[in-house]
Image (cartoon, rainbow, N blue to C red):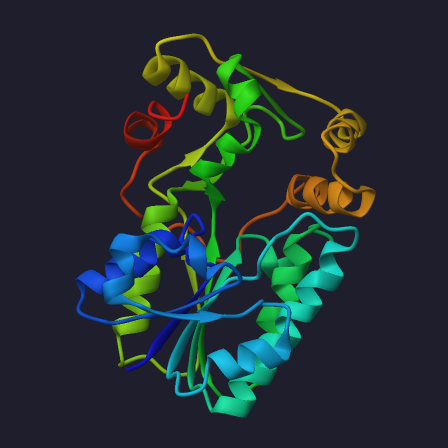
Length: 289
């Protein structure tokens, strides 16, 4: 089975690529920047240059592919949802043109809302487009990445986190490596067919207060979190150089899931993965801060 992986240097796909190699597969990596693939990885993979928003490039790069791990690339943009639409169109063109029979899609908790969740709406649109095709597809609806804590590394180093969410409200938090493990097992398992939704919820739902407490303990210094207004968060994103539509899309991922949202997939043995925030902080965060 020929497996292709997009965004191979991303938080999840970087782990996934190595897992597939260890399993004996030789994945095809689709990337805009082939020079950024690690030299030590090159003997075990094939590389194709392709921009995930360019349909012609994706079609050319995926000829002969049987299964595809697809990530809608999130980039700094004046119109992020239009970018998601272009990526979705490129994916559909490639699946149809090359007869790709199996897709595992990196989606998100909240995509089940379909509308009103900011940038997650782009993932929902990709889910719907894949569902309309006559293929086997699994949507991985992932919780909040531990690695998102590094998006504002300066604030984390200063021990101050901000959110628009209620500090005691719990939500799924997950390690990217655990998502990659679920993705690898799904890609390598030939027994499933049809449309499936598989949530990846991490080991426990966490509140921001609990996250601050865990980080305080593991980093050995106080980490505080405060709830700020939607407008304050938006202004902060704009001040960081984010275009207005991008700031709205990022903010919407929190505000859209804030009030009375309940994930469609409830926590279960099937959705619970092992890596805790404590262990992730020890293994990956301490080396960065």
